[in-house]
Length: 109
Image (spheres, rainbow, N blue to C red):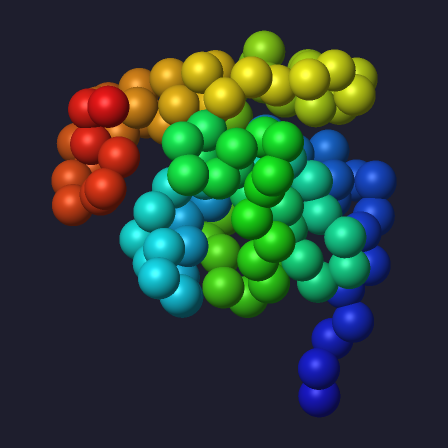
């Protein structure tokens, strides 16, 4: 039986601004920042190919949550202020370096 996902405020606060790894599609394995969600979908941006202005819409079941977030990005998203692509790219790049993530099309750009 399929569960219907309802975008609850408590869950929104928990995952807003977190990183997510794509599990399916042509972007499989890529890291994104969660900018929001609606129903069973998340809105993801990587700051390069998927910008904050045009985030990727991806089903929750096709994304692995990584509960790491940058306070500045989280606060901006929570308050409804714009998040810049440079901030997203820097956050993802720093996470990859700290965790020695390899094999991505975004390496050291």
